[in-house]
Structures are given as structure tokens and as C-alpha cells.
Amino acid sequence: MEPGRKEKCLLAELENQGILLENLRAEVQKDLDVFDLICHIAWDMPALTRKERAEQVKKRNYFTKYGEKARKVLNILLDKYAQEGIENIENLAVLKVDPLNELGTPLEIIEFFGSKANYMQAIQELEQ
Image: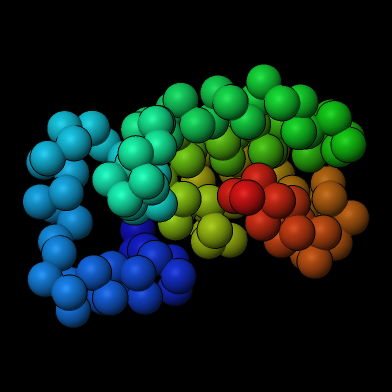
């Protein structure tokens, strides 16, 4: 999938400064999101993989404010993030692929959250 708008801007700025993402990843030798990679290199933050970051979110019980079906969707999206990256969960098309499509149509899945705005808010909170 294509990177999100913020990630594109960040990557473009890095390239303008002569810094290539592939070189940074090779240096760290871990498959990190751009955010984690930069925080690790620039501020010596722990180099968390997407899987490690997803596990931290699960431990914080972030999903308790949602109903059972919505929590299931968020857990699946968190697993997708751990495997594929953030840009895949930002796109509504993700609701059409396995295993999310087994929960219903994209419209039905969004209704688990009450509205599209609530769904998008949940995704933003999940990303943060």
C-alpha cells in the first residue's frame, strides 16, 4: 500500500536532506516504521518493531471503551499494522479484505462504531 500523506511528507523531506530510508533501516537492522526509525536514530528512543508497538497498545486496554464487535475490528487492524504498517489501516479498503470482510461489509463494520466519523476517530486514536 501507498504511504500516508504525513509519511510521504516526512520521506520527501528526508530525501531532500540526502537521507534515504533504506539506508537508515539497513543501519538499524530492524523493520521499523518511519516514526520509530527516526525517533531511534535522532533521540536514541527504543527501536520498537511494529509487533512490539502493537503489543504495547494491547496491554494498555485501549479498546475497553468500544463494544465487542468494534474491539474485534480494532484488534484485527492492530494485527494488520504489526504485519504491514500504518498505511494499511488508514485506508477504508482494508475493511474489504480478510479477515475483516468476514465481519460484514465495510458499512456494517463502520456501524459497529456508530458512524464513519467515530470509526475514523477510533483509527486516529489507535495510531496515536
